[in-house]
Length: 307
Ligand code: 3PG
Image (cartoon, rainbow, N blue to C red; front, side, top):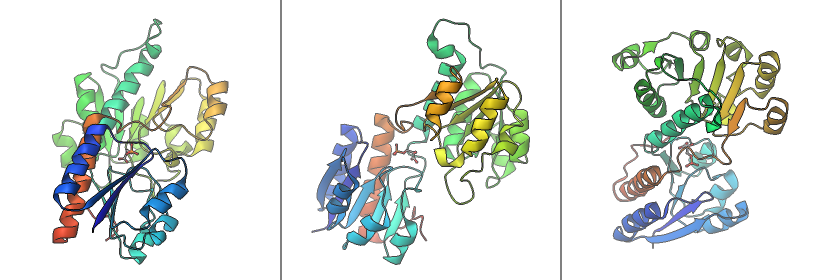
């Protein structure tokens, strides 16, 4: 019998699990669930005899993929697939898919929520600042960047975007200023929202050359991945500029140092929670289940990322 394993260190909302199970049951497959596992070895063992995997940021390493003898497809219920060893999957003929856009609104709402929280001094009662007429730069205009811009418009922010992969007209038609380079974006905007994937081109790419250009006061907002930040540059910015702040859904490795040395200039969530809403879990989880079914039944590889 075809078996589908949902393996989530960070569990989905129960409604999402129910929705996934329903699709799996109706397709006539066996549904298995491994949630909040304590050790990677549990994931390796649970994946050993399954045909399909639904995961979130769970680490689908070479070890997991090689141990899973029957594995045909991995659906990442989410956007980023930097947690999956694509080379190992391709070598084994395993199709890897993501579910782009399904959790974008949740991530964008968190980005704007963190910006408001920070601008209003953590709701402490001290005088903060407003967002109206402030300049926001969207670095990468994908599904999340688009939603951040749409929400920020409601705050009356001036919004610029830079994305070398998106035609200028798309950005302009959404009423944004389309900038020609990352350098220009960082030179222009007091707030920068990072909406880039982590890959060989972007890791460590948010560096001193970019960050040092930001006008005073500068607030860097990261709901993407910690790996895209050059942490040496981050530490230097904190040291050189008293106006620089960093708020992030993914705490940097140097979290303890900067929190201790530069109080009041950071905010970090306790765990990555951008996509942690019922709606996003349902959207991404159900999309993943449907994509697996459509791949197994019809060979549909629409969202394959290891083509
Ligand atoms: C994504 O890449 O989709 C987001 O970072 C969400 O990741 P998560 O499913 O682990 O919360």
